[in-house]
Image 1: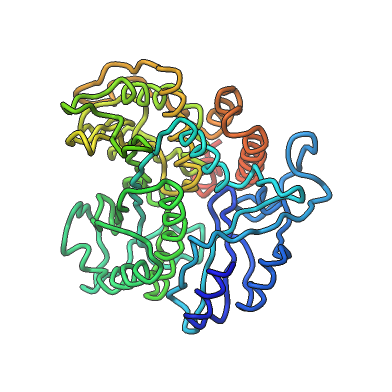
Image 2: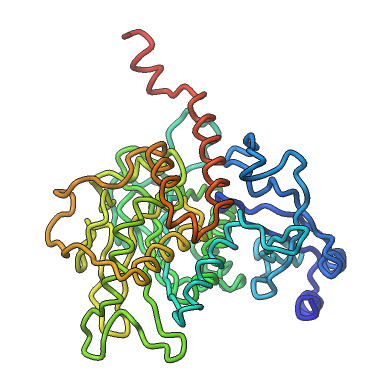
Length: 449
C-alpha cells in the first residue's frame, strides 16, 4: 500500500477505479476518492457482494444451489489491490487511476469463482513443475457505426474519405488510415496505460482490425487484454464510433478471434522447452499439443462463452472447427508458426474475441499442462485444409456446457466452485436468450407456418 499511496500522490490522482473482472471479463467494482481508496485498502474495508462473480452478461443473478456455489445470504468479499496493475486512465480530464483487484472471502482465502484467480491457480501448477509459460495474444475487433436499436444490423463506420467500407481490405494500409484519429488515440491511451501492444493490421472484415501484444507473462498479458478492450471502446467512442469484440457481429463477415501464441520455458534457465538445441520439436512440445487436442473441446465455454460465439466456429474465414494441427496452417485450430528454436510455439486459434482473457488463457494453459504431465501423444500433423476433417468442436452452447461439466480432469485443476459458477451463469444466459424472439423468426415463420 505504501507503493500505491506514493504512486497516487506523485501523480496527483483524484479518484481510483477499483476493478475486478467478472466471469464474462466485464469490469465491475467501485470508484473512490484517492484518500478513501488508501484508507479502505489498508483496513480491508473495500468490499463487494460475492454475487458479483455470478452476474450474467445481461446483469442478472441466476438462482444458486447453496450446496455448490453462491449463497442466498450473499456475503461480502474483500477486494485487495494488485499494485502491479495500477495505471492512469487516459480518457478522463482529471487524474484518475485504475487498479485491478483480487477477491478474498472472510477466511482470507481467494474467491475460487474469480476469473483472475483461476488463471493464477493454473500458473501455480506450472511454477510447481519449474516451468514458466509465455503467451502472446492477438485480439480482433470491429469498428461499427453507433447502434441504438438492437433490431437493426451493425454497419461499418464512415472513415475520413467520407465512405464506409463495403468489401474486404485485409492488410490494407490505406484502409487502416481511414481511422487514423481513432488509432492515434488507441496507441496514446495504451502508452499512458502501459499496455504493451505491438502490431496493428486490418483484418478481412469491413472495418475489422487486429492488435497484437508482445509476448510475456500470462497474468500480465491477461490484465492488459482485459484493460485493452475497455481502452479501445473509449477511444472509439471519442470519435462517435463503436468498437465491438463480439465473436460474430456482422452476417457474412469473418468472426473476431483472440488467438493465443504460447510456449513454455524452464523457470531457471529461460530455455524454451518446446525445441531442442537443433531446433527439433521436443517430446514436451508434442505432449503439450496433445493436451490441447484432447481437452480444448471440453473447455470451449471458457473460449466461446456466448450464444454468438458459435456463429464464428464455422468452416470459413480461417475459423477453426476442430483441433487438427499443422505448420503455418490457418485452417487448423492449432497452428505452429514457422520459427527458430527459441521462438517455437503453438497458436491456439479457438478463442473468440468475446472470451474473458483470464479464462481463455487459463483454459489453453491447463490443457497443455495436462498433456505434458500425462505425456500424451498428438495426432499427426496435417497438410492442406483442416475443413476436410470432422467438425469436432461443440456446435452449440448447450453441447459445450454438457461436455464442460463432464470433464473430470479439468474440474480438479480449475476448482469445482469455478466450474459450477460458470455453468450456472451460462445456463442462466441461455435461458434469457430463449425468451427473445429474433427478427429471423418473425420474417420466415410469422406467415409461413
